[in-house]
Length: 194
Image (cartoon, rainbow, N blue to C red; front, side, top):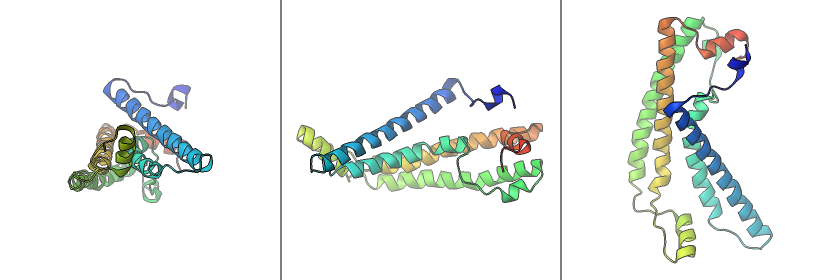
């Protein structure tokens, strides 16, 4: 493997902007969680008080971060997978199995995207207590932001993961039809993937 193959793949255009944006947002969310938790620890152990909203707000940020980064994790190959059956098959059969396995996953993600949106819409009139408390402390009036915007993270994350898998499925199918090796097969043949 040469140096160009070892370097991470960089994309330009819309895909590159999307990937950079998602990574940036994920990093900002992680930074916000760390800052809030440091403030919570300092408030509790230095000032003898507690930020009653800190744990709730960190939980909501973590939920959003998790669902936003699903597609990025999939693209990086960081999902747990059972490779016992595909690894024992010839390369062409392995590709077919992976393509066939993607179809029920796409159906499930489509259902989760739709059901998540329907579920989130049921909470339009319930507000986010932590944000109401913070905003009311600063301005004197509650923010009244619907908790729907927390629950809708499921739909957005599943929708983005659906798109990642759909693009991967199209690329794998194209490689199979053209008889080209895919990245997984190249790594397996090189002994990099168990």
